Every structure is written in C-alpha cells, then in structure tokens.
Amino acid sequence: MAEFYLTEDVRRQVRKLAKFAKLSVSKWVAERVMKSAEASWSPEFLALAGAFPDFHDAADLRKGYGEDLPRESLD
Image (cartoon, helix red, strand yellow):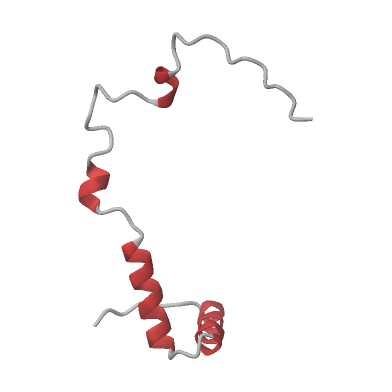
C-alpha cells in the first residue's frame, strides 16, 4: 500500500470533490491516479525523444517554400 501526504488545504478539497462525486476519498483518489497514469506517456516512449537524428522539426519542413500568401477576407 502506497502512502502519500497532503496539506490540510488539499485534504479538504479532496474530501469536497469526493463527496460531490459520491465516492469515498480513497476511491476518488484511486480513480484520479489511474486516469493520470493512463493519460501519461510511458517512460520507454519518452526515452525515444531525440533518438532519431534525421527527424526534422517543423521549422525545417517549411524551408524552401517561401512566404505564405496573404489570406483573403471571408466577408
């Protein structure tokens, strides 16, 4: 079982949010942690950042195309 510590202000906020969601504090915290973990990139994926030296950034892709034309009015 993991332990974590919250300031009293955060504890009060968590209790309010859990009550509003009609969940126990434990269940509310567990659901939020799971959602956060699911939405995160894996460490293996993040380790690949910069691993491809021939991968161009967006600025390089626009080189040689010249200036953009002025936009036409939609009026």
